[in-house]
Image (cartoon, rainbow, N blue to C red; front, side):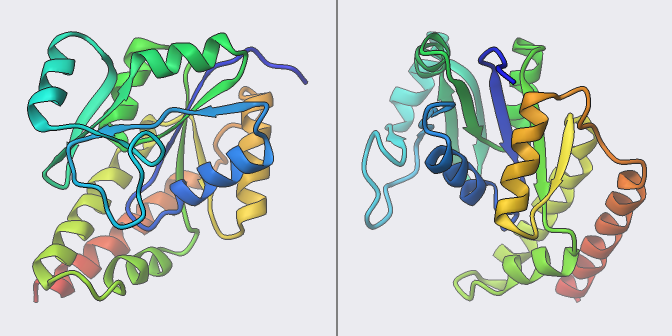
Length: 215
């Protein structure tokens, strides 16, 4: 089925796997997806390239861009600013490809308001213990930073009901296939009936992990 190009938003808590899925979609379907490289005020990490991984902007430059209306969406995350450039989105849509955005829930909300035709997808591993392990196991964060990540994950999952579709990321190929089916026929591939109870259980386990972390 051929569908008209649209904005496809992937969101997930840290450790949810949205960036891995976005890369797989681009690699497997390069003629169907264009990826909008986000602008950010954070410094480049080892191996990252400007214009490839991110557009690395100074804070003053970023805020000036916000004032000039250059961003489709922007948000603060982890004490840094991130945003999607309108010019990148327009260029990809004009090429006949879907625009793939790997952004957090605040940005997704802005995109939904600006473009009702945008498709928003929230990604999680089925088992909350997997997400908790990924959040805690990195070994590079302090206990306070881990607590902040758990609080952020709880907040983001609480916003999941605003998304069109929830995808379980347990197997990469299956997650990619589910997203492709959603894009091809979004009316047919909606949420499943038991998703709400699953999400509520997820939130309860994350809150328990957060309580234990505070203890």
